[in-house]
Amino acid sequence: MQAYLKLDHIDKTFTRGNATTEVLKDINLTIEKGEYVSIIGHSGCGKSTLLN
Image (tube, rainbow, N blue to C red; front, side, top):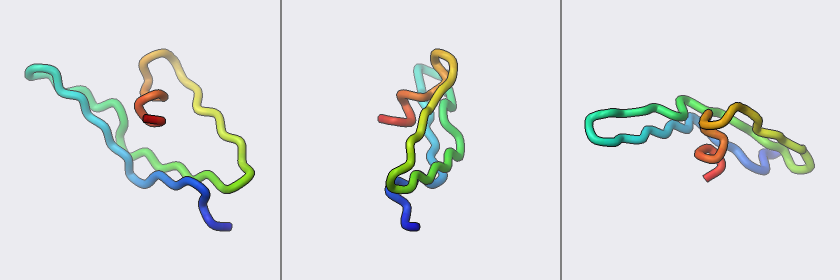
């Protein structure tokens, strides 16, 4: 099957002043057409960042 949505090696870092926070590191996700996916985790773990 061909991927409907594919994320390869996603990284996201926020910098505030001299502080750097790595919130996503080497995220890989493949979703096939017709699949249902849930992204779960505690508050502040990067769910919304990944989807944005």
